[in-house]
Length: 189
Length: 266
Image 1 (cartoon, chains in turn green, purple):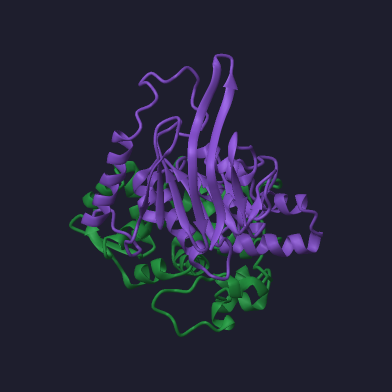
Image 2 (image 1 turned 90 degrees about the horizontal axis):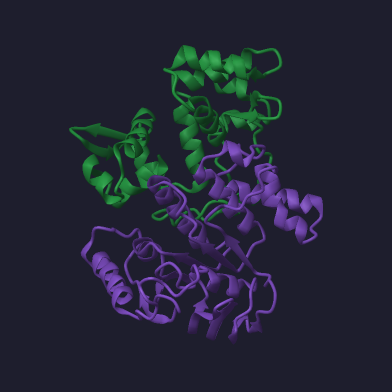
C-alpha cells in the first residue's frame, strides 16, 4: 500500500488509476488491494477512476518511516476489525487470543480471504497494535518499545520542516496511550 | 573524497574450457555521500564486482581500495543486501539482525540496543519475534536491510535488492532506502546499487556506471542531475533512460549472442 502512495506522490497526489497502473505495469490484482486498503484507511479518495490524496495521505507520505506507523495505527484503530481484536485482547483474562479465537473474530467481522489472517496479523504488528507469538500460536498485547534513546536518530529530516531539529521532536512519536508503558493495549480501544 | 577506488580491475575465472574473462579494465570511484548505481545486462559481472569490492573475492589484476586501504579479505565498513534476502529461516527477525553483531564479538547489551535501533528505523518494530516465513517479501528485505545497517557500514552494497519484490512493494522500499541514505545521522554514507533495471538506477542514483556485455567493461558513467522525487514519465528522465539503453545495445557486443560456453557468473 505504501508503494502505491509513493507512486501517487510521484504523480503530484492525484492521478487516474489506469495511469498509475501503467507506470509500473501493474495488473489489476496488484493495484486494487493496495488501493482498497488506502481508501479504507482514508489515505486516498477514489472518484471516477481517479485516486487523490486526502490530507492524511499527504501527511503519511511526507512522514518518516517511523511516523508512518503511528499514523497507520490511528487509522487501523478506527476500523471495526482492529477495534474488535484489540477489545477482545483486553477482555481476555490473560490478554491472549489463540489462533482459534482470533479466527472467530476475523470470521465474524470480515469476509474470509486466503491468507487474510496472516495479513491482519502483519498489519497489527506493523502498527504495533498487537504481537503474534508463532511458537505459542497466540496474539498478545504489543510490547511498546521502551527504547527512546535512538529515537533522535530514527527520523530523517522531513522536507519542509526545517524548524524541528530538536532531538525531542524527533523521538518516536508517542501517542497518549503509550505513555503508560507496556501492557496498555486496553487503553487503545 | 573517494571512499572506494576501483582501479583497472580485471576478473577472470578458470574453467574446463580455458579462462573466461568476466570483466576488463574497470575503474571508478565511490565518493562521500554518493548513491552510485551499476547497471548492465546479465552476465556482465555486476554482482561479481560487488563481491570484489566487499573483499569476498579477489580481482585477477588491478586494485580496489577502501578508505585508502587495499581490500584484501572481507572489508569492515561495508555491508551487503542481497536479492534473495539471505535470511536465516530458523532465526527470528531480531536474531537475524543481531547475527552480524555477534560475529563482531559485541557484548549482548550493546547488541540488544543496536538491534532495537535498526529494527525501529527500518519499520520492523512489532515483528521482532516473527520468523522470516511469516513475513511478506517487502518485510523480509527490510530485515536484510536492518541486518546490513546494524553494523553501521560506511558503504551499503545492494545486489538487486528490489528484484524479488512485486512492483508496488519495490516502489515503497526504494523510497525508504532513499530516506535512510539521506539521513545524515544514519549509516551508510554511500550506497552502491547493482541492478539490471535501468529506470530503477536512474530513479535512485546520483551516477550510473554502465557496463557492457561480458566481458564487462565500462561504457560510460552517466551523472543523474534530476531533482528527487524523480518522475519516471518526465522528458529528462526518459532521455537518460534512452541514453543508457542505447549505450548497452550499441556497446561492446563482444560475447556471441549464444554466449561463450559457461553460464554468466553475475
